[in-house]
Image (cartoon, rainbow, N blue to C red; front, side, top):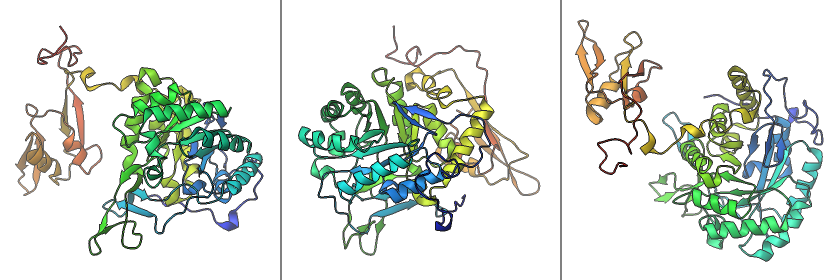
Length: 454
């Protein structure tokens, strides 16, 4: 695991130097690609933004983030006064086999600082860092007057846009906000329309994943006039229990509750939801800010290729510090150079046309596993997985020296990829495309489908 060194106080730079590359934490670029973005009319020097969360709770954090080189931030969600009151403790985690954090859970609410303090700090930070994207996340009761009151106050800060928090899954839904709004498309459309009526700022609607079909609130946001959507917000979760005390983590006294799950473990869910919105005709032109498990430049590139115009990061920054953005920018820029991409928009949504429904896949396409005997270490994991849980397509052959050799039975291999996934040696098992001599045929054309098109 890469260890990221946090920004030491000794290295801190004074605020107010937003136009300086040195002050922004930008080292001399080792790439030629232009990482700047124009997302729904909001410009930023790069697509890496900090999501609305503890890392963007106050000016101190945001300034340090900008010094480190982040292209933008979404300020932690503001609400009406009196401010929310949080509990202790607030976080828990799901760990991988090597002790790394694969999933992160929190029961923290929106800002617990007054609206006046937040607005004052936002105004100053935007003044000092005019080249960075500064979006303000908002959550107030689902009442027109509440939105009509807060929007002019937020717009007066000079911020670049607002993000409507319709996704928070804990605490706030019990008060009729957060996911309680995001799960009802009619509410999403209504509040979005209020915001477009009472503010001239770009409106980004943050969507909840705790819903049957994320496309429906996305369509509602579009109907309400949203300039963009962002997703995913956190997923309802309980990470683990203390089996002695019989209470889940994080523990508050002798009780707990479900929280919002994020981190690398949610990336596959987020990628799918982003892709679904990007390839749905009604929302195909809706700008998307991708969120969910983005930890490195490859993650960011995948989100962008599936429809995102910017990406938001939270958990990775909380685990490793703000300076991870240096690696993210450098990696993305170098990769873009290697592919001949000069700008982000040259590969944005490039994977969307290749993402389709199962019924459109080629039924005549066939791959078969191949084991590179020179790389094989004889662990037998592929054989065990295939023999016990798949198609019994790998032979276990005894060698003269007492070790084993594993070979694929071509006639029985269905190309499921399980052996490749379980193999601990990179490129030892690969999937080889077979020439079937048959043309493309999808399931709707397949004679084996009793409901195929006539």
